[in-house]
Image 1 (cartoon, rainbow, N blue to C red):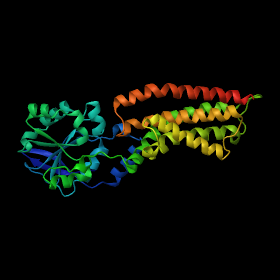
Image 2: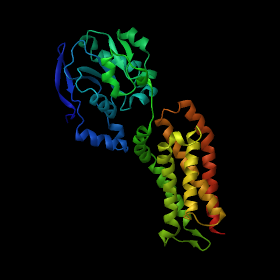
Image 3: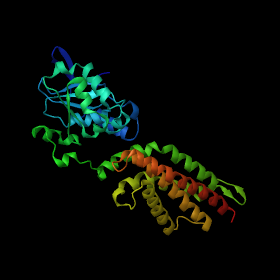
Image 4: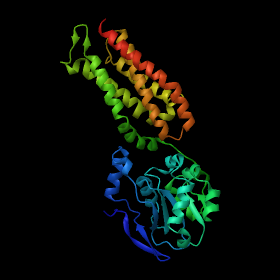
Length: 343
C-alpha cells in the first residue's frame, strides 16, 4: 500500500528518488494521535533511504533524520517551499534522541546509508545536516574519514529549519537550546498513561480484593462501599504520578522524579482526606497515604526517559535508591490496610 506522503519521483543522476509532500494528511494526523496513545507505536515508521522535498538538485542540502514516522512528519511539514533531500536512517522506528542513545542513529548506520543510496552521485557537495539531538550517536570525524561528507548540526527544532537555511546554515543561540515546556510535557502524557496501564489494573485489583476484607469475612456486594472508593483512590494516585507530576514538573520541589511524584501523591491524598473521602481508622488512613504516594512516586519515574532533565546514570541511581522505599511503602500500606479492617 502506497504511503500517503509519496507524491511522485524525481530523477537524480539516473536514479529515481521518491518525492514527498510537506502537507500532513488526515491519515497522518490520526496516526499521530494513535501513536501518542501508544497505539501501533512500534510499527509507526517509514522506509529508510533518500527522499526528495520539492525539486532538489545536486547543490541542495541533505537533511538526515530517523525513520520514526512522527519525527519524519514533523520534519517534512516544516520544509514547505524548500528544495532539499532527506536521508532517512534505519533507527528501528525510534526517534532521533532516543535512537542516538541506543546507537541506531549512529555513525555506522549513517555511513552505510550514504553508501546504499550512492549519495556522492546525487549531490556535488559534501554537507550533511543532522539534528542536534542526534549528536551523541554520531562521530563526525569517522563519517568524514569513511565517506568524505562533513557533518553539520542543524537546530534543535524543525520549526527553525527555514531560518537556519536562510541564515546560511547558521543556528542562532536560541536554536541550540533544548526546551521542555508545558506543551512538550503534555504531549508525552498519553503514551505514558497507556504504558503504565497494567500497573494501574494490577494495583486496582489488589486494593479491590483487600477492600472486601472485614471481621465477618469477605463481601463485595456493595461496590460503592469500599471497593469503588478503593479503585478510585488507586486511579487518582496513578493520575498524580502520570499526569500531575509532568504537568507541574518545574514547580514541584526536589530534583528527583520519585520525590516529585511523592509530593504529587501526598497532595492528592490530603485533598481526599480533607474532603472526608478517605475515611476509616488511623491504620486505614495511614495505609492509603503510603499506598498512594508509593504508586505516584513509582510512576513519576517513568517520565525520566521522556525528559531533558535526567541522564541514564542519574535514572539508574535514582531507581536504586527510590524503588526499595516505594516497595516498603506499598507493602506496609497493604498490611495496615488489612489490619485496619479488623479494628
